[in-house]
Image 1 (spheres, rainbow over the protein chains, first blue to last red):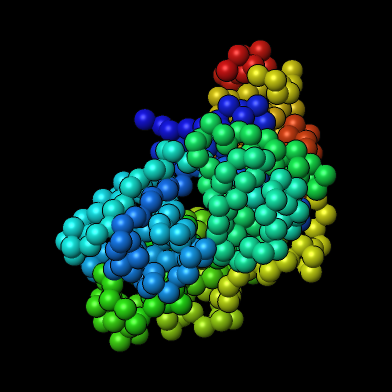
Image 2: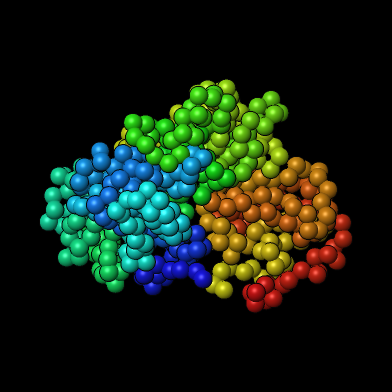
Length: 373
Length: 125
């Protein structure tokens, strides 16, 4: 069965084209991916990301359960803070990457689309196995998730809430009212721009917020944004897309998410990671920028002197840079910044340079914009 | 279908068009196809002189998100390619039937063209 967002009808009216993603029929684009991409980089865009999951983690051992099942020590995450982390299998590979929010005594976790049941089941199994007084509850279908992103996102949102958004720090979260509707607000996003995410329940109240945000942002040129631009926006910042970058089982060390690991606590998968850390011979996530024409895509081979040295997990034409960019896994001795590798696009090599992420720097539109839209 | 369909051209079910002038056929993608793709950002053209058979892959047209093959509706030899598309592939979005043509083929067998759809039949798809 294909699921739809509670805002489906609103999106149809706005002229959305739909695609299926992780079992959901969601807007891929409204006007065009390129146009929407630049709206978010330069102005403000509104995303419906209700396909993402919502899981409440409650009980006196809630923090302990998160600490056990993620690379983060949740006791370090203060009330009112969001944290990006990863849930691992015993063998160290990533089940899912996620953000969790500390909201008073409870935690809300936001697993990826289609991961709600897997993550909830895994957490409850581990709670039982380790005798923790904690419960995970899948409430994904009870929430609409909106993301408002772009340099004008704060000004837009501020028009609809009494909460002083200057007081909400990056990765801060709290319950606020937006257009008189109670929402969980988190100062987070997946675009690399200034932005906020809103969790709204019951879902029937979401249309009010959705419409109010579009009206409030009108003076700044707001547009609804589809999943197409969401993907190009995140790729320019080299943010992971779980289904692509963790496909086939990748550890956080391979995914260059070592910075998320808080080593000084016990967690599932730690032993495997410690073992891997001692080796040098594992592929690592690598950013590649094409230096000639061609667009790398998912599963293109990466070669050096005719030998396969890795594989592309995500690739696109970067709308901001107007060149092909790719993320992929490469052996460590082949990924020195500045070195040139071949990405095989339809059996032809396209030369690409190893880059330090992100491809597109912070506040690109203000500093570097050179393409007229 | 609200898209532009030109009379006098021949069409395929896979949304290519053919314009036959003498023994030469210009080939492109239809207004419907360019709208489905939106934001065409890259076109891979064949080399001039290449011999192609009806149904072969002729070009690759890429949008930001997708890769689409264009199949040749006729057999023959590639005699010209639209090199303007190398630097400005978006021309196809603005002018799919005129400036956005892809390839010109010297047709081997003109009767192949007759088997293609006419504008009225293509509109019905």
